[in-house]
Length: 461
Image 1: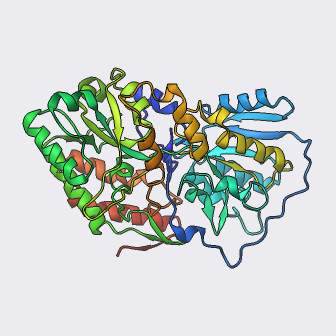
Image 2: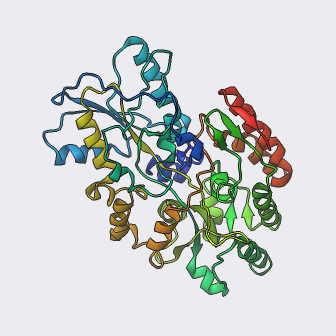
Image 3: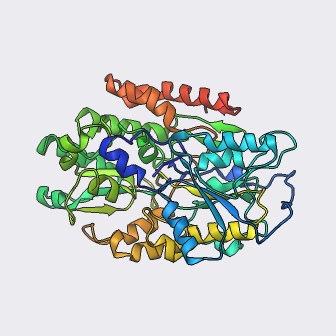
């Protein structure tokens, strides 16, 4: 799993490093996963029709994949023995790596060397859909221009292709998503006589009750570098809201930000929300067994509770995302989700799109994938796989399926990571005893400075 925004939420240490590395580039490269604002996908008046290079359907294609997806590419080769693949393993954009972008810039200068297919993060799409220099061709091919059927693109979970969509075209196919849900320990809930909350008010009330009746137990953590994607994204906080392709709204004084910061401040103060990250060193040993609830991504079940905390099977379950007063439908966040791009320079677009389509939509591949597929029919196959359900206390299928379509697209896919300011400004402030609410102005300034540094205009209202 990589951060939905390609930031590689710095949660990979010790047991957590191994567990999260096994996940799909889901964030953390996320996301959006990473949702893109609707203005990103409005057609540009100057958009040009895609003109492929001279095609050779017999040519070998070069595929760049991360190590987690390597077995899937190898399986495609096994099932398609006539396919001619040159497979290269690289970091896949994890931890905010700019390796792919740097290499593409080099290939653009030399006029050769581009891979045909790459696995990457949503942040990669922000540069891959634009030329790296005047007169150059954007690296990513627009898949909606006679390469992938529209009916296939339409079958992805609602909003999941938002990070792929720029100027009215779709430049990637989402591999997986990490929709946020409410995880809870059913055994502890039953033991304490508690009801699973359905609203944020109930969540806060339960945290306050837990602090009095069972000190030391937790309903969450804000200490990981992707915690903001679980909480503030789910609150529809306009921290990364593109109102135009070149304009970012960073308005942390908005009520949808402060309602979450105030709620969390209450629970941080009574010590039911930890400022130590779930994936920080020593947390699993010291507190893993005391996590009553965790608001987080769909991969938490297997990779947090099972792999990191080693909670026995049959105890952990998931409930639907929580709602705020006046809401009938929840909005939720996304903490992960990688994607596949086809190069506009490919001389064998047929083989390249065949591979990408199989990797993202095939039941044969996705039913066995480590994380939740973005393609809805393949997600059904994933949910039907006993290996993806047998650990849990009850069937999580409906919760996962519904939450997949509730990811808020106003937390936009930007040219920079949403983890940096949270890690460098917010987490140290919390550690020093400051409240989240008091830290919002500093967080806003840090995000705004990052945005301006990469060319965005910034509004804060």
